[in-house]
Image 1 (tube, rainbow, N blue to C red):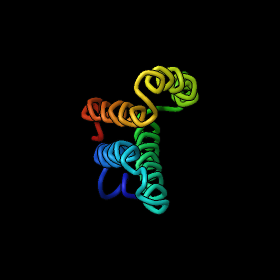
Image 2 (cartoon, one colour):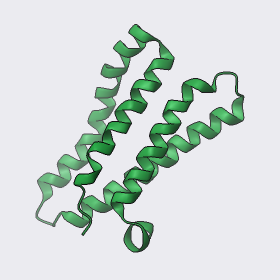
Image 3 (cartoon, one colour):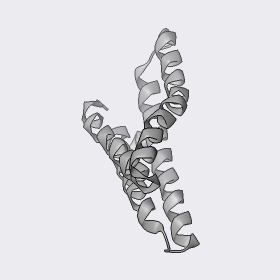
Length: 123
């Protein structure tokens, strides 16, 4: 409802990306802060990811037509590909810089998504 009537996909993509990235960047700082703080931080990363996923799906399916089966298939295959790509990026970062640095790297990668959001045309 927020995407369709009030805010729009582009704005929610920005909000979700900022929430997800900022909470990911906070995770390495949560050592010794307590279980509640860590749980809340992890919960907020998923809230941001959910906002991004819903906005992206909404935008995508507003733009494709029934005949665009190839685009729909590609859209559906990209997310599972990330499950293969993420460990390939995370392993060298963790091996070289440590576990905490992997969260900083991930937060930075997520922030890079903000470069592509202005290209979303919601009109």
